[in-house]
Length: 395
Image (cartoon, rainbow, N blue to C red; front, top):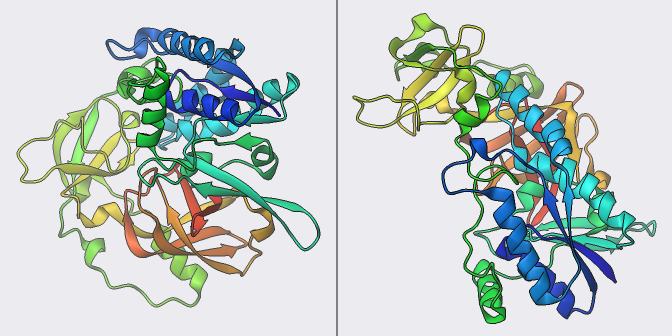
């Protein structure tokens, strides 16, 4: 089978290419050049030049064709501009999820298939298989990677059945140490290379520096809210319906400056996200302060002291109907239906027992235990065991 592998210049995609070759496939390597501006990356990071050189060395070592495709304009339009817009509006985007949906498994995949490939492979720690339903239709299943520490199924939570049907994840059934060992035995250039950090295909960046390209600094005040804030101690009201209860549980508390005490200044509410403690420059507290909310109109940041501060937690979240995505389209809920699942709201977070509720007003996820730092714009993903069923943007 002719397979195009997205060779990123890292050890994971390098070993993925080797394993495909060992399985007897005709392998072609494509490197995506997605970013040209090194001015925002941190010192000693030269993302795409170094990565493309490493990818070329791996391709040469394996004896497979190698090509660089420039997708920087598309990446800026679909990922970077989206990020700027989300932060500007006080939301927290996940560029890695978007990069997979909009770039790797969309335009990149179409480019690969136009070269005559039957499948596209990446170095993700995830698995895909398929079954045939009672109507004879093939259903594709997105499964967690074998390595619990590296499972990347969350980043693939927006993929469709069509995209999964063309996808291969050759390292999904092995662990990271095993991947390193294979690379060392082959003496691949990427064997000892550190895992990439930061934004997908851009590298390690200072996020405020990156955002300052378009979002200008704007001084505002940091307001501390205290444990005795009245709404934290109010009794839960009586509800006439489950929808009314979920609306209450998923609602954000709206804070005002007069609810707390001004304890410092910041350079722009759009540079921070819910649950953040680093970079706030707050001292004089026994425990770290965490951002619990922000007022974009007034440019205010609200913080609370300690990881267990009540304002950090919510028991439910809502996803607008337009933002719901079912990987397993056949399991899509109808209005009034519920489904017991496990869910997470960020990468590496342990799966949490929860229930989906579909209403005409939107989809709600109610967690068994309150969740910390639920941020608008992030993706919530839900699973049945090892299988990722769907996802959506938190509203």
